[in-house]
Length: 233
Ligand SMILES: Nc1ncnc2c1ncn2[C@@H]1O[C@H](COP(=O)(O)OP(=O)(O)OP(=O)(O)O)[C@@H](O)[C@H]1O
Image 1 (cartoon, protein in one colour):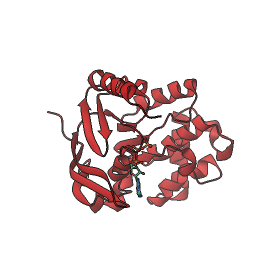
Image 2: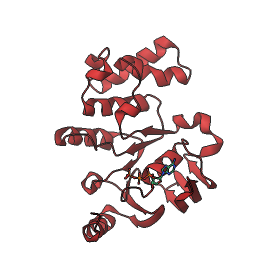
Image 3: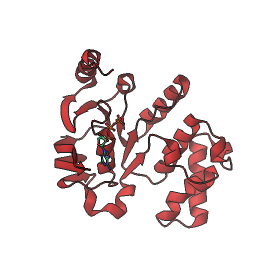
Image 4: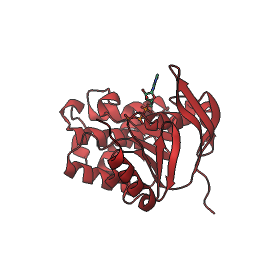
């Protein structure tokens, strides 16, 4: 029997007088899970709750055997969030400095951190990036650097918030291959139904609640039909 890796029980989050997530309960065992929903439905908020950046007003969240808001300090080792905009995540001038930052924070000595970062660059055939200025990388390259920075921390689950939004088609395809090959569980928010074709499960969030939940074959056509019927202009 599959073991539940992520669970939310009656999770509610209110900000600025608005209930953003309403009494949400979910049990997630699958390796590849897509989150869809219209603008402002609560998708990014859900990812932020899963990685402990936000704490719920009520309810409990467990991610890979940790109760999220009780283990905030260790949580980045469990759940790694890759932000929608790489510029919100990348803060160092060079690739190697960026890669080493997280490792130094969790206690690696400088030489160890450099060696681990270099090994990962070799694994992803990007050794030549080592001393590149981050500012010289393209959007797709920056997105990959964000993923590599998080991978170095070896989290059990990766949370992607619209990773394809700024990427051209070829870069999107390459990044999709990188994501597909990751051994970790991945939860991904995207506005593009096509990006979920190989996923195990899709959760459709609407006004802070689960509207539909199931296989891509069931949920994506229903989502597309509803989107076509919806007048947003
Ligand atoms: N700190 C906050 N204070 C007040 N309202 C907030 C806060 N954070 C989010 N919200 C509101 O909560 C709702 C859900 O936001 P969220 O970013 O989770 O939506 P989303 O589904 O990811 O949207 P999008 O697809 O546009 O990225 C929005 O209406 C947003 O304005």
